[in-house]
Image (tube, rainbow, N blue to C red):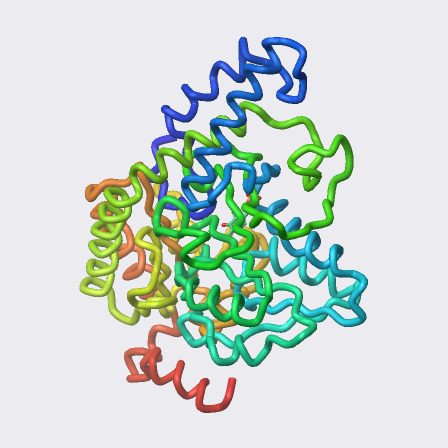
Length: 406
Ligand SMILES: *Cc1c(COP(=O)(O)O)cnc(C)c1O
């Protein structure tokens, strides 16, 4: 495969250093960390303990034991929401405050809890996807059992004011969970500074292996487990530990912390080169998401009068996503773009660029050439594009839609 990979929000390649660190756990060191009667078990326990400390350091957790290993961030998000809801099921009324643009792992876990009479409240967001802090505070009451707000969005890259949310949560005495999957290694986060009570982590979004993740849980917070069994992970997640995966997650966390500053600066330069190039070379485009409060590796662009899928085909040799990977099999436009009021005709022409370690300036320049040619060719065939020539700008179309209260 000689592709340029620009889909690092969906997953990332395994770092060679991470693979090397995992090898002993995949071969000779096959002990079960719960076996404490022999050296195989002790070696495995030591590897798990080291990885736990590495993950704790990445997020600023005060104790390694605050890290609960899971099968990934989907499970971590489920454990955060269901674990709290079930621990509080003695309450006659419960509600969770979250955002309409959360990852499906949060939204669908919340929807499941609605069947158990947990009310879901969506705090308002602005057209960039940033939470309205006043509305958030207004949605909290004595029955609020959790605030779950992502650190950064996987489609539009918008970063939330995490510390301010943490302060509000603390003031109201409500636990605060954040899905930090997309931010880790790209944007600094610290559970103590930002008053975060739970934080979801996935290894494969930061150059680690798939099928492993973690939930940071502040000491003293009670969660009811989803998976019962041998009482592993402080009774919050039973099951024999995935030692190779955990070692890989630990190494990936160490590297993410080590390279955070240099890599996020490098990604920002690449992203700006891509963004500036698109804006300079292609007409009738708009950026979805926040202009500056955005992950350094993310760019989400609406190309008016073009179908996103067709543009991806035109960019043969580049691995890209239109909208969200999870919904791209259906023809529905992305729920995230809908939630920030991007009109359908722009949402259908939107592409998500997810830059990462494998990308260079050369890649960006190749993609810019392909985009410029592809957009020109597709628009030549588009009857809608005639609208543009007649003077209907995408902005006026967009704002007349807003004016109609849509
Ligand atoms: C990928 C992703 C998840 C799911 O993580 P898995 O480890 O693949 O289960 C959750 N939240 C966000 C924001 C993601 O990007």
